[in-house]
Amino acid sequence: MPSYTAPTRDTRFIVNEVLDLASYGNLPGFEMVTPDVTDAVIDEGGKFCSEVLAPINQSGDQQGCIRHEDGSVTTPEGFKEAFEQFREAGWGTIAAPEEFGGQGMPHVLGFAMEEFISSANQAFGMYPGLTNGAISALIAKGSPEQKEMYLPKMISNEWTGTMNLTEPHCGTDLGMIRTKAEPQDDGSYSITGTKIFISAGEHDLADNIIHLVLAKTPGAPDSSKGISLFVVPKFLLDADGNPGERNGVVCGAIEHKMGIHANSTCVLNYDGAKGWMVGEENKGLAAMFIMMNAARLGVGIQGLSQAEVAYQNAVAYALDRRQGRALTGPAEPEAQADPIFVHPDVRRMLMDAKAFTEGMRALALWGGLLVDLTHKAQTEEERAEADMILGLMTPVIKGYGTDKGYEVATNMQQVFGGHGYIEEWGMSQFVRDARIAQIYEGTNGVQAMDLCGRKLAQNGGAAIQAFFKLVGEDIAAAKGDEVLGPLAEKLENALGEQQKATMWFMQNAMQNPNHLGAGAHHYMHIMGIVVLGLMWLRMAKVAQEKLGGSPDDKAFYEAKIATARYYMDRFVPDAGALRRKLESGADSMMALGEEAFATAA
Image (cartoon, rainbow, N blue to C red):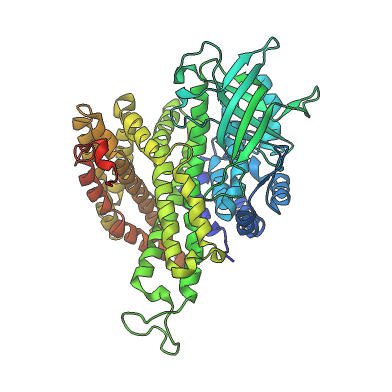
């Protein structure tokens, strides 16, 4: 049976030492998070996930969710009890606003908890995770009455939430949706249509499910400019605000999926369901992006989470499994064979995983800090810059984070050899669960085009220039240092490759937009390499400073510097190859006609 231990030491290192959360104590919500508080949240949260959620991950995958004839759904054994413990402990309230019953702590801590939950049990984590996306939209666009009515119980996880976007005939192109919203005399709307792929759409974990649904009102433009957003509860609320009469929304089926079996991914049928508009008519796209951006950061964390749990199990297996001898001679002559950990190819996969997961964790938590600074930084200029950098980072965290997370999960399965392909070892589940993160909340191709087609040119390129300046300053500060200097020089090379790729787009994409589309994926990965390199440079700097003071856990900091060197040696050179691919343009990619792809008889 696979195991999981939350990486609390590494998380504390990033939160307390690299991000130095305590230094933001003058900002709202940060004053309470002393290192003692952050350590307690991280350690106790990690303990809950390791001891309560991880043990039901594999059984939940095997059992899946069950839909009954009346459209109700039951989750796997142990999920309801675990969700009650999750709710009672308040783990879903960490970063939620205090005015609606949250704890008001920084999103950094909420992101740390999201990783632990998803590593321990990704399918479970999607129930509160989707709720957070719905909460974000209601906070930003809901009326005061809607906020008062729904947010407290959603934040407490007494009720959960969903995002209803996709329909059978349309996914990314939401302008094609057909779900209708007919206005009623009482100010409500009658919602009719079918939504698919609705994660956590029906279940037995909460007293009510609050659906946020995209639909079109009569006469609305037949495009994305005609979309409105509606709140549609599973149970209508009575005069006291409690769940009462059942609304006209029912689960028609549970999707049969590759992974995340313990999450009820539903087809939801709306048949005159009563709903209320959120925000302005035909302005639902803006509200949808609030949900999507929150969810995209969470999905990037899912990529990290499956890589982390797969890595932990692969390390344990590599230390235990014996086969062959070390190339330099027997590592353990008294044994019949050496652990496979000694073999360079196994070590390659494990080091790739370690370099990615620790770098990605730093990036995800830095993303959490940017979310906080967007709202709470002292000056308008600081808030605007944080928002600008966060907008740039969001598609990278989601796209690069899940691409590499899936790659790591499959490589960790590879470490197990044939046993990795056998279900009882659990590695197959990590791979299957990781796969969806590249697809939902906007496929990674969509993320790449969001980055390259929208974010690079936004405000005259202000965001990417700010990013280049930020990385350049860290590089300049490290140059000349005996330990950090060589790391900075290699990162500078990667930054140069990204700058060249950016310039190539500027010179070529206008004349042929396909050049942008053909290179966007490569650009997203170049930027992922650069920003993880920035994280490793920052972590190495802190580690070097700590080693100068003879710390108790010297080995931890030495490993950080060694892994930073590995990252710069083995990840950073890929930026040049990706830039050369990008600069090959779209001509050969788009040259063949449709008939050339047909299989010959």
